[in-house]
Image (tube, rainbow, N blue to C red; front, side, top):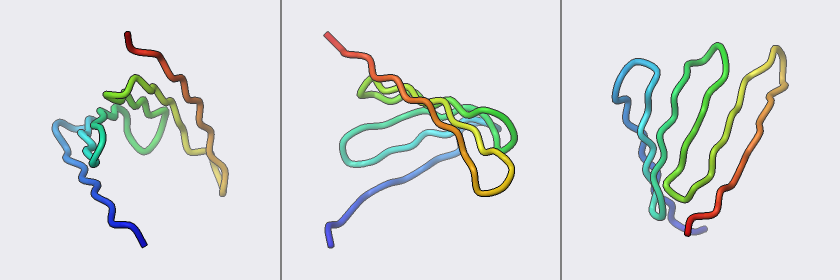
Length: 65
């Protein structure tokens, strides 16, 4: 089993800084409503929990030059 590293810090209410071995990201939003994540690799994700065992996620990757 590979070793992984992931750490999440709460910066402000509704704002989190997520760090792993290869990148970092900032997540805004709370439990109720949409969450937006912007990664240092250029990936942007919008996600939202729906009632029941459902969830919704949309991911866009932008290419860095």
